[in-house]
Image (cartoon, rainbow over all chains, first blue to last red; front, side, top):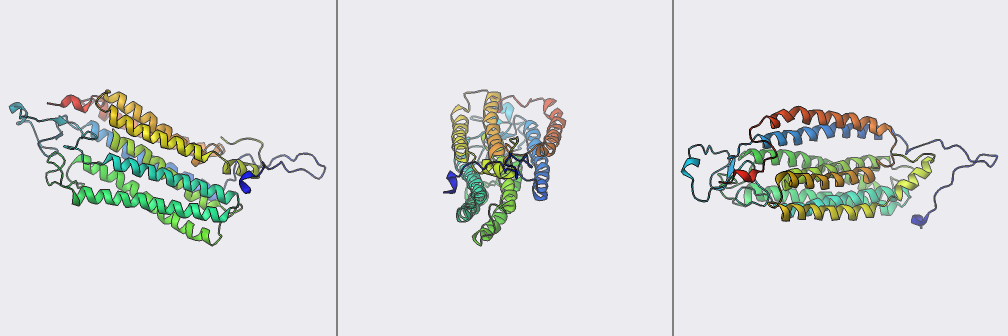
Length: 250
Length: 117
């Protein structure tokens, strides 16, 4: 079994002595450098989004959201009358149904799903590196499918938020959570939407990999494409880990 | 960082035998911890403690993904020459935006709940 393979010995010279290793790290390919350069720009892209979110959130007035009035209502003339049961917040609190419509339980499960896809991806690459083509194809296909499930859950969540559920007045004046109802909604849809677009791109690339892998395109000597798409996929997972915390939990 | 004195074949061997399932279970446990931390300690901790705890958990998870799954553990120094400037620029962007937070009368780390009426 390939899993039980022993650590490869250093090559020896014609005289039987140990040859000097020629490579100190995994092979450096143009594709790999390109994807890391691209990921460096992506770091700055998502930092820009998250940084802007933090500024907008920090700049939100203490009366920006309340349980009795729609978001961004000017409460200057309302507060002195001290309406019964009025609670105001600078930003919707997690788990507060009166101002925050996000389903954290569902998204926590979706986060777990995306982490699973990262694992299948790395196991797929590992299988190709060991020349286990069938196993690699199975893992790659599983990654594409699990990624599609993540996207499906996100589409379901968007549909529930925008069209299906009717939320309290503190969430939206119209009852639906659409990007135009509040700053919170705009930020939420911008950040998760851009991330979702990245996942969609990843699923397409992963599907192409999966199809090619069933035709034996990748092996221990040819896995560069799998590694490149894998790096992108893991980065998308990494970004989601941060977004889930910043947007949903805090 | 890459292990030294290994041939390309040996590096590939090390990479393909990394403890991925252990990392997966660790990520799963951290996700459950993060969820529980936010769910059950929200309202009992100060806003700063809540944010701090959640960010430590999230950054630990992100580090595990980068270090093991993205093979930063095995890559050469060249990859850090790309990542470090990008991360520095990212820090500069956020630092540049910080005055908008620091000079705001509410202050970012004031709990939103204090505005309760």
